[in-house]
Every structure is written in structure tokens, then in C-alpha cells.
Length: 240
Image (cartoon, rainbow, N blue to C red; front, side):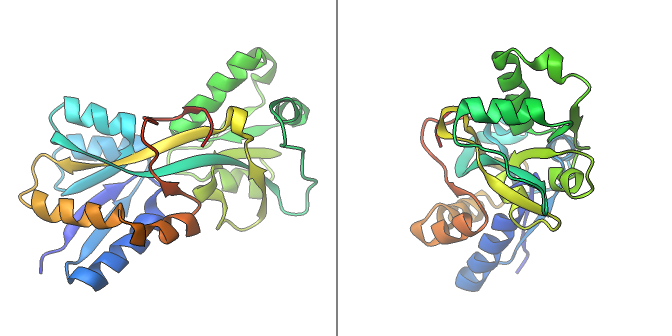
């Protein structure tokens, strides 16, 4: 049987691989997902590269729908992901219990790492809201597209790393201190978009229904994510 072909940004790649394997075992329909930086993935879809489904932050899927690259009504919310904070293995753990303590930890760090994705943009917006954007200028290190923030932390290039928990929990050389507190948690919804050029929309919908079923919840949690939460459209500071 010809496999369903998908592509995703980096954050959901592990849970999608696990769910694709489970779906193949259950249905007999093979599924293959590629992954890359979110901007790169969207460009590949826009260029006409053949995929049946694309998984990105929900606002990116909406943009692909508006440009005609995802079929109308083809968005399915799959995953919700929050941001965690990491330090290099063996380093002291800052207090993350309150918004004020996180702000103090950021100001105390010589360098802070963040991602190019939607959670990274929400983080810099948070710093602006705190009134510390100018003080942090020169101390913020943005990971290259597709580069894990964990690598910046493990190499000692930054003292604190902020990224979605799913991107940190399996990385070597770091320790995950904890999640951002609820008052400032940055939540991203990852959505699937059924590609406009696919001839297998019905098969994709069947796969996505499995990925949104109760049988998929444990896999999402193992990879540091959870089911999509209605009403959360894209990255922003709010309770997960």
C-alpha cells in the first residue's frame, strides 16, 4: 500500500512518529512523516512538493489554507504544547514558581536561548511586556531554524533555554528545570492541514481521527504534549 506522506515542524515530530507507527499497526496503512523548521516546511508545501498532510502551529496552517495549499475545512487541531526551561546539566536550578521569579531568573542569566518558532516569538513578546526587552538585547540567542535550543544549553552558549517541553525532555547534556508557571505559560496548538493536492483526503481524515482519539493521549503525554484544547489557536501566554 502506498504510504500517506506527511511533514511537520520539529516540535511534534516524535509524537507524530509514535502515532504514525501505532496507526500503521492498527490499520495496515503505512504513514511517513518528514520534519524540518517550520518556515522551511511551509515553503516546501507552497512550492508544490507532494504531501498528503502537514502539521504546523495552527496559525501557519491557517496561512496555508488562505493561500490554497491546505484544502478548505482541512485543519484538524491535534496537539497542545507548553514551554519549559532548561539549564546545562549540573548547574543550579532557578526558581520558576511565579512570574516574578522567572523574570528575575531571566535578568540574572548572562545569555538566554529561545527558538525561531511561535513559542520563541511569544517569549520575546513576554519580555517586552515585562519592560526588559532593551536590557536583554545582546543577551538573547536565537537558535538557528531547526536547531534545538537544548544544544545551545548543553554547549554552554546560553545559561537558560526556553522551548517547548517536547523539544527538551529527550535532550542530552541538559536538565529540565520545569514548566513556566500558569500565569505566563506559552501554549502552542499544533494542527494538521490536509494538503490541497492530495487524492487521499478520506484516508488522511481517518488517520487524524485516530490521532485525536483517547488511544493517542498517552503517546502525546510521553512526548511532553497533550491533546489540543478548544479555543487555543496559537502561541500566547496563558494557562495550559
